[in-house]
Amino acid sequence: MKTRSIFAACAAFTLALGAAADGRAQDSYPAKPVKLLIGFPPGGLLDTVSRIVGERMGAALGQPFIVDARPGAGGLLATSALAKSAPDGYTLMMINDNHALNPYILKEVPYDSVRDFAPIGFVGSTPLVINAYPGLGLKSVKDLVELAKAKNGALTYGSVGPGSLPHLSTALFARAAGVTMTHVPYKGGAPALNDLVGGHLNIMMTSLVISKGHIDAGRLTPIAVAWNQRLEPLPNVPTTAEAGYPVDAAYWFGLMAPAGTPPAVIGKLEKTLAETLAQPEVRKRLADMGTLVTPMNAKEFGAFIQSEMAKWRDAVKTANVKIE
Image (cartoon, rainbow, N blue to C red; front, top):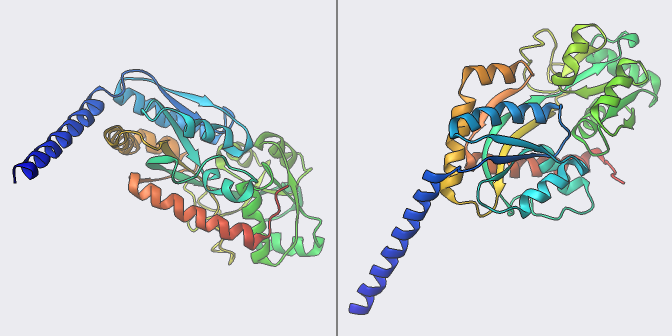
């Protein structure tokens, strides 16, 4: 009986020490600047969202969140760096939809997209818009489908690279519409958009961040929003679902830490992110970019990631997309 009591006392003492250490980690964190990795170049959608969110979280926590762009291989370089970083809360990453896509479109991924990371919270998503070169005279999805059939595969669509969200989503749309189009991959959004505006490309799915100015100036014609609801900045542009070809295509963003990060640190970041996304000014700035702010906590975000991985695993097979 005495032995059992001693074991019980030791266990209680160990738990108390753990709780105290966890509490100290939460109270003292962050004691220095936090690095916020992104896997794509500065100036794009992911960078803009990360700076808006990071700036407010840093102000709330008393330490700056410094965006560190490490572009390459569809976010693989930055994500690999996160997986290898110390699990202390000082290296985080604003991951995007590529986190769920990469395991199925890249030959080798040097980490486990679920096991090697600790979700913090989901920010939101930015549905893609099907934009057409105005010279084509397209006004609707019906027009697009009819022209694609008439062109018999000659109609071109751009993307930011093989296996990217615009590539896969347009391929799925074409399959749903029963048409064939020619994929023209680019190494980034800027050159693809330039060719679309210049008429060297016929259509492309883009975010409003890079296309809204061209739409407002009449240099691009928005045909449809690839989502299940219209966007506030484009109230008169119907959805693909309304046109009879439901294809959900959206860039999404969420905050992630390396696996093994103390639960108290994750909890503090989770709470701060939720408070940041509840601020009207933050929500407005993101909404103006066509971003739908739909916060999720750490557990919900983890489940979302796994559901997205299952979705895109099946989509890659369905679209019969080949990545060289």
